[in-house]
Length: 482
View 1: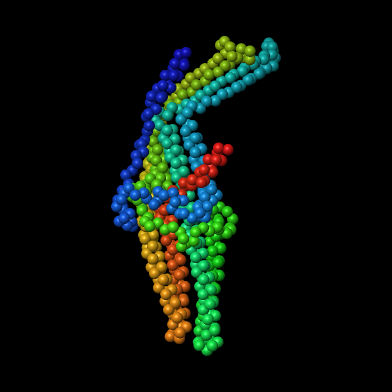
View 2: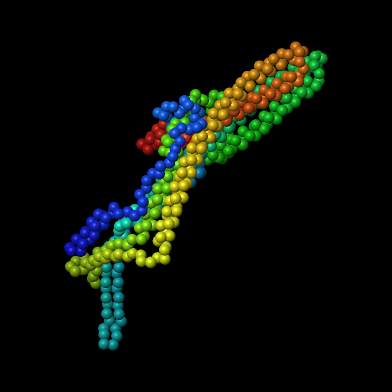
């Protein structure tokens, strides 16, 4: 009974002193953030209560059903996402291994020995039998918080891997969206090229008729043929690029190269009137790469405590309770029970500076993590600024290209009228045709650039690509109910 009371007292003492934890507690560092983005418009920056574009769900930010299906497929099937998910499982297992050090280790044993010694002069043969059943426990008290700090670090590593997976998903699906808009841009360019080819063939036919009647020269016919051939060559090039782009998108979504289902055309994509960037300070709570870097800092900070705890004595409790008897019949009766209790205290005296070096190493890693955390934040701010500038200039170039195409279309109509009525030669029509075709392709490129800039800004603002659309969520709930 006295031994039980002693063990209870030691356990109570261990509980009371468990609050002693070596090393610094983590405190979120103050990071200087700009008040507003330099690339945002005044309308974007005045109302702080306006939600950021990055806070929208991705199916609201990009309303194209075909693109939504591609994003769903990428999140479910892409190999990089599956690798990141496996890393989370590994980090969770490592957390369980580390956390187990805080708990007692209990084991059981059973041994049975039967022995016979041969007869010797003056002594008959001897037979002995011994059986023992025991339960033992060993517990290193986490007096200085060594195991608790290690568990804190492992938990932060797990959170870091979870944020890393979100970053993988964010990068992946933004690549899918950008590649999809690139494909729709090429589709538009192919449509323009085919329309231009049909128009130039009609123009060639008209020029041939005029030449047969003697109203124009054969040189005009040859120039019209050159326009037809150049449009045909651009079609062949675009068809090749479209097929390669479809192969690229197929690999992104985790399937073999194949055709890609289209949704809205590039011209029909919804364009937001205003794209609010929100406050820079909110970026710190939304970008997965920033949150990943912060958890890495938490993990490094906790390891300092684990290293400092090695300076202090280790307190270990071991106990054994069991039964031992020479006969199975009396194994669990009478005086057969046995027990032992041991408390050990061992501490370092001289380690040649190894423990101090271990603390210095942990502190250096914490400093590296802190510098990396600040660097990731600054790069995030730059990413947003670059994306805002790209979106703004893309919108300006798109508007300029639209006005240029409109002017050239009217100019081509006038050039054809002048040529048909004999007021100008075919060279004027030829130059206007070439300029219009080039301008229409530039307009398609400008529209694609704007949509890709919108994707880039959404990713830079920490858009939630990991959110599950309502339809998918309903399907998962129904599957769980079955």
